[in-house]
Each structure stands twice: as structure tokens, then as C-alpha cells.
Amino acid sequence: MELHLWAAFAAASLLMAVIPGPGVASIIGFAFSSGRRVALASVAGMAAGNAIAMSISLAGAGAILATSALAFTILKWAGALYLITIGVVALVRSGGDHDAPISSSPVGTRAAFLTNVAVGTFHPKTILFFIAFAAQFISPALPYLPQAAILVATFTGIAAITDTLYALTAAKASGLVRNKRFRQWSQRVGGGVLVGAGIATAMMRR
View: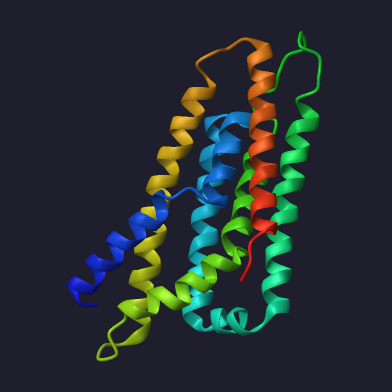
């Protein structure tokens, strides 16, 4: 892959990655509701989802979403409902006794990982963006597959770094106060953010 094309793609990927979207919102939600370990698991899930979505896009599935309103709608609502469900679970679990021991992991690492695999994979705007944008950085004079693999690895790696920074910052902020009431409210905030991210996903238009 030509170096100047890779550098331009890396710069564009960084700009895209630092802009908060449903993925970042879900990571921050997990950080507030469940702590750093769960938030980092959700970052890993998002990285896997991004890699899957980008691979599918470069394989041509993005063209189907671009022309099929039904496919777009199904993916949009699948992702939205999943986010909202996890958020509601966090809100329900935040309603326990103030004096009862509060679990440091209301949502498990496995659930957080799988949730964000789904968020990253089934985000239709991401797939459409990749097929419309990433393909422009592939040189037709060079083999396609190695270049596509470099683009997938580049974007996934950059997004994972920025997502990790979001997760660590949010987890640190949620840990500033250790009293049980604060933990309960941080869990509510995290659940609310996840529900909000789901609603934002549901409201997306083509």
C-alpha cells in the first residue's frame, strides 16, 4: 500500500474515532455503571465489531445496505434494541438497597464484550461509511486484499486506542467518589447513557 494513502487514511480514521458516537457512548456507559475492567472489555468488543463491519464493507456488503432500506432498518433496530436493553438492565440493578454491598461489576465483561461486538458490527452508518470512504484509499495498481487488511488493522487499532482513553477517563471519573450512593447514581447515569445511545441509533436516517 502506498505510504501517502495510508497516512491520509490514518489521519481520517483518527478524526472519525475521536468523535463520540453510539460506540463511545456505550463504552462510557459501561465505565460508569460497571467500572474499568468491564469498560475495557467493551472496548475489545468494539474493536472486534469494527473489524467485522469494515471487513464486511470492503467485501461489498455495504453496497447492499446502501440500496436496501429493509437491511438498513433491520440492522439499525437490532443495534438500538440491544443497547437499550443493556441500559435498562443497568437502571434496574441500580435500584437496590443503599446499604447493601454494591457489585463492582453489575454487567459482566463477557456481556460488555458481546454487546459492543454487536454495536460495532451492526452499526449501519459505520458500514456505509467504510464502503464509501475506505475504498478510496486502495490503489488499483496493487493487490486488493493486502491493502484492505492494512486499512482494517489501521482503523481498528486507532479506534481501540481512542476508545481505551475514553474508557479509562470515564472509569477514573466514576471512581473519584467511593460511597455507595454515588456508585448507585453512577450506575444510573451509565444505564441512561446506554439507553440514550440506543435511542440515537434508532433515530438514525439513511
